Image (cartoon, rainbow, N blue to C red; front, side, top):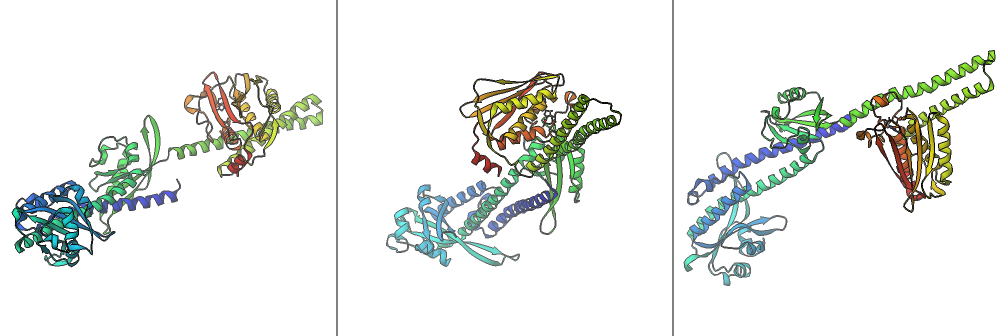
Length: 579
Ligand code: ADP
């Protein structure tokens, strides 16, 4: 990842953690606020147990339970059969019955919603003035909804009002958030003005609990969303409080530190013993902006490289809320860097070797001209070697150019024609057979193969030549090298290039097709190459011929590179892919 991208990511993460911390603080201030406000407005009647009135919205469940108890208590004090809370929903401009209710089943409750312009509910909500009614069946404001749904005879409806007070307990703002209904006085009695006053006082408690619960739910939801984002980032993130305790750690970070149990609240030294990382965190917690570091972590028995960056998380006033650490896996990037530098060494060697040969044989020939040292046969042999080495040079340069092209997203412009399959197989085998005296290169055709196929002949030749070159190169002891050809189903051909050479260790089988990837062990070290050949071959098989390639191999026994491709390539599809 480039510096620009990672800077960008760092900024995003800083913002994210800042939001998260602000929310956490909002959350806890909400807790203390909710306690304060309910106490300030509590009616003595409902304060018989402090746990109920001094509602601590430590969590939603607790708040819900407190509210439920309060509703029951109101029913008891007022001797009402039913109590219903309604909350104003801004999106629909409706008042909606919300749980908990008393004396009403949940299903009925769920159906009870009233437009803010309708009935007694609407009236009390709009005017924020309590109302009492004695004969619901004959009252226009109640007979439509309350009577039919809840069988209401009489009742009181009071507004649910939230009051904001300043430091001196003066009311600075009043908002009506809904209404509270008490229906049907027990024992055939009717509600009176004293009941209205009582209900009004208790509505203040109900109102503040609901307001806090709603706010709390909204904050929780926002926090949940942020946490999800945090959790799903591919970079590892760890947020540490100024006291050094872990307050957030996302899935990627937990994977890096192999943390399975609960880590939140642990001191960061429980998570890592890496001295560089600890030093980095210490410096960050001390308020500094430590320079990014790179560390190695042993992950499931393989060493992986990580870059570690950090940022201070501060609130708007600049107070330190914590320190966030961003951990990115840079193993692949580092491997590529390593491979690229070994590639440079290899490529220089690969360039120098043919040049040395060309220079050597041409100088020899030149010397020979004056003294007539070499006969026609010798000269032919020397010139043959020079031509061969020039070809090798050209191939290397082509490989380099083609790799650069593929890497930049371009394709190796295909040129599709119909050509004779066995002709080209025989030709390539013949050429390679001449190239090495120690190897016997053979062709084995299994069953019937199509006489002609459609593809890019030159590139097909290149695939085979490359695989055969490798087969010869990686069987230093010599032996048979066999090109196999089969028909695969009705519409494909399958080609295999088999050698009896050094083989490929299992863990490299999938990787040899990656650019610059070379097996680096005792057997291979003396065999030079750039690690580009198979990368190009794979491109030529998969992209140019819409085929598949893989390798089967056993160390010490040999390898077989296999590929399949359509016998008649869908030119339109291929062109689209390669355009
Ligand atoms: P190069 O041969 O230039 O290193 P390639 O991309 O052709 O690059 O091959 C990548 C690696 O795959 C080689 O370095 C070698 O380790 C391994 N390899 C390829 N072909 C064979 C083979 N026939 N037998 C054993 N190893 C092979």
